[in-house]
Image (cartoon, rainbow, N blue to C red; front, side, top):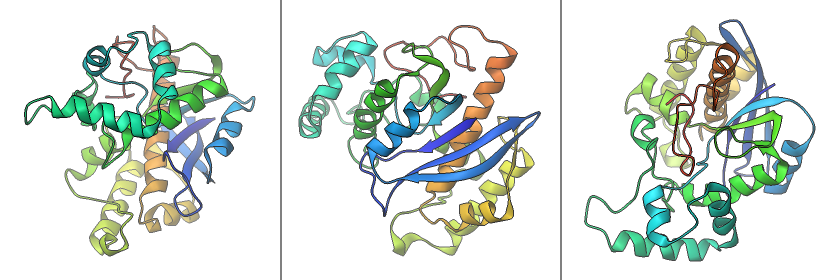
Length: 272
């Protein structure tokens, strides 16, 4: 099974976590089902169940080394994550804000090595989007479920979690065009057209991944008509997970899944 996860650190019925479930065949990925979770424990329970999968999760798996070293936190990944999980969100916000305030304009945030090639937000960012809190909520959930995080943490080799980033593929297709918004006032016809363009490119295999998306008319309509873009983002993560599984099958070198030799404290975004 392949998984793509559009994650939120504070899920609800209105804004749930979305999983795209599928499988891979030569040259193509099938989207079979979309599943939602309105609480973190619900997702944690699902992840802990004994089934084999490779998943791409839209949340950071690590913090910038520069940030961790400056704050005096543990420089080993597991110890750092344990410390991070022990902090409240308010403490995280306070410590990260103090770090930024002590730095010059234009260099407020520390970045991971993967941020450049992925075009991703710094994983210490606590607003717009609050990826620091996504890490705080998501990584402990994965560790508690006992899954494997290649290059970072050994776990069940049959349940493999990889850091994904849907914006990497979306920007490859759309450039700077926006395709989603949680604000109803911004759920425009232009964004609807952009979602259609993303889906069309995925179906034709016109991305760096070289994989074609296959899905039913019903699921296609669901992806296009979701103005939040959450369903489409989960599908983009599914495509990245499929690419990683293919790379692992072709050449399973350490750490595998198409990942380069990366900083084992910071982590890496798959396919970046």
